[in-house]
Figure 1: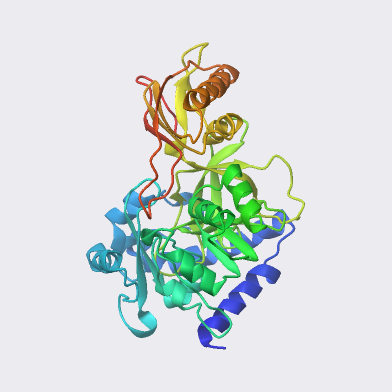
Figure 2: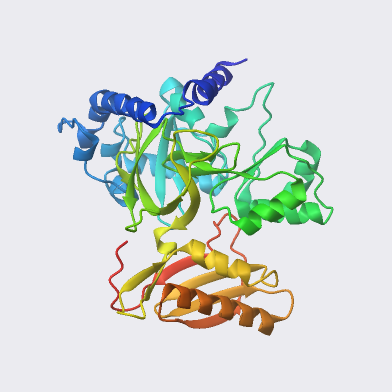
Length: 425
């Protein structure tokens, strides 16, 4: 077994068995000890934090992708300039050759490019020692992947930009035991399997990069006989994973997550992430625009990490409408819309909802009776507005178009809130 494989095995054993917390207080004590060491030893190595002498995490300013990109060299411990890293990442995207690194030998850094769901370009740096802590980057291959190849592990990368057709012969030949991809891709592969063109029986299916919705989960399980598990993964790190009961738990053994609650009942929040295991590009009080919905009951697995009922999407996937009673801005979370579309029936195969003020542009893929399907969607949405006590927006229906290869699927998007509404996130 080579050195990389030994490191990977050690990381896995450390996470799976040593860090299997079943007591919340022990988990928080573990976090605080690691955070204090991170603040003391790692943070001062980046110029943004060198002279501040922070003793508590709450004393640090918040950051996001825009602020990190604006002062890229200040937020990594090597002082790497954005102008040094960006050309490597851009050339890899253009050439589809992801082997080159920044630097050589033990100090070599993998450089990656992330557009993110919001479309804002970001660059990430990962050292050799940190590579095995990063799970997947689906749009692009990377040195992060090739370290997994060994006599025991045969890793095969399929370029999303090439589409489904070129992947089918390779998949049929390789017969993978583990299948990893965005749910829209897994759904497309499930369709190929149901049609008899794909002949694989993976033992594990892992969904990444997009929201895993119930209809996708059902179709994937029906075709492959396996329920897909979900990784909550971003450029900022591995943030969550599903347990044996299919519940997503936050990866709090390696990241500290402050919830920024979005409602008084504390059912949904945006995560503020600090990764206290990072040594190169620092993620400190980094606000993500994801919307997470918490479980309303403890998970049967007994893990102490916070259980998440759903990763609903980005904050710009939350629609805002005025309340009937007082015109107050009221959020309509993506999960409400997905449920409405689910109840509209199987006649709607795909959809996309975009808010433009008090109008919703709704693109539908309907193989059957289009007027009947539009009527059912309109009926379900009307019921939703009534249940939430909201003013009904105008509905504009059009034809659904598949996103370009490599582009993340977004079924709900808010491009413009209704004029005059004071949206709070």
